[in-house]
Image (tube, rainbow, N blue to C red; front, side):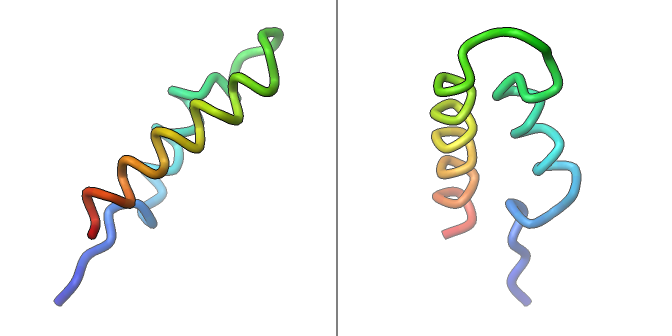
Length: 47
């Protein structure tokens, strides 16, 4: 049985929070980059 932690709602919420999507202001591009980096890190852990 393979569990992909990246696909869980808790991890998705965590990645969005870390990226700052729940905060107003800030640089949108920086938020996208952080979201991609943290998301890819979780995908790496899954692999």
